[in-house]
Image 1 (cartoon, rainbow over the protein chains, first blue to last red):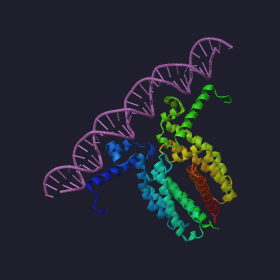
Image 2 (tube, chains in turn brown, orange, blue, red):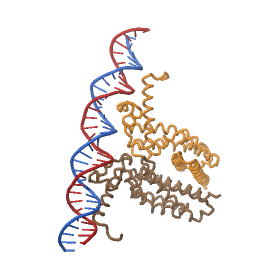
Image 3 (tube, rainbow over the protein chains, first blue to last red):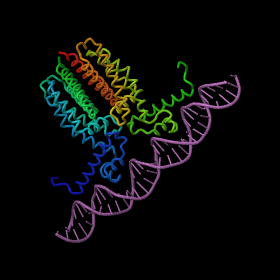
Image 4 (spheres, rainbow over the protein chains, first blue to last red):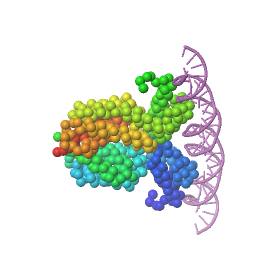
Length: 208
Length: 208
DNA sequence: TGTACATCAGTGAACGCGCGTTCACTGATGTAC
DNA sequence: TGTACATCAGTGAACGCGCGTTCACTGATGTAC
């Protein structure tokens, strides 16, 4: 499949992406379980029936959005954790990375935070699976660290869950602070940094 | 107001509670933003218009549910944190308390987890306010501990946020594991215990 | 290159349905005397 | 205690509206020769 897409395929992909983008925008102010198929097509400017050429239902579209949103998070998480010892400098950099990701993809972050425990089961499942993969990746990263010597696999998993959850919480707080005063964002950053530092200290003395 | 409610008031309260209960049950499988007023009244067995005698809208009902759900959580959180040093025994007891609360009030816990980042703004706000009060209560509890000597208010707040978020995450994991094998619940308990222990260690060495 | 046929993304009319909200109402409960 | 009037939680009909889904369609794009 090295040749360019045909005109027809290219146009289809474009419409599909427009549906995803419109849905994501509409989801800033509501949950997926109340998102209407006609709302989405109206926003894009196509007939309601065109929706079915791309998705079976809004739940199906939601699952596609999970891939899109967490695909864009993937590289960030690895970078954030890589060599994430308790060094203050590294923690600061990690928090900055989270903040810049939220600034770059606020709608994606909001979507994941909202639907992680939302009312649409297949979407919750897709998010759970993706986050599970993140946890494993973080564990693999942590295992590489010399400080992980003597740690059981259970211990490494416990810590990577803690890190992944902490990142999501921090991302969600940055999101809330996006339209607020810069001092509020700074406060979120400071608190998240302290929490990461405390976790780092606990990590350092875990085997004492 | 020491006398018993009149028959009329008592009946009204009963209907109101029936609406809240029915809504909570319906919210196990959907989000508040897609919950219909007619759904709720149908489940209770009253006319749709009766709804307006109690709530302006489903969002208004949602705010009432927040009070109900987090009111029932209040005593638990204080008990969980009181004297929450890193002693393993106390951590184990705290995790057991969370598990038993989730078992006793699964629908309330699910509602809060779902709507904390959900699509209905006034409900998100109500949850944020209640959780903010929890954070302050936990901070006050922590400040009493002798180990908190030398801690700044910022540090205490940072830690109480960490504890409150950790409790919510753990509650949500217990919820997911409710209908699963007992081993899965046990695994959630073990992991949460280790995480609390790690946080406790970090807390202990914070001022080193 | 040109022609004849196949594919299929998007259309537009039509459907039955449940929604939120209004309104005037009823009849049990509450209150004043 | 009894009577006459006020209150108000719950009713039921009616409304206009947007929903998801079906269906036969169109016309640009793709393919075979």
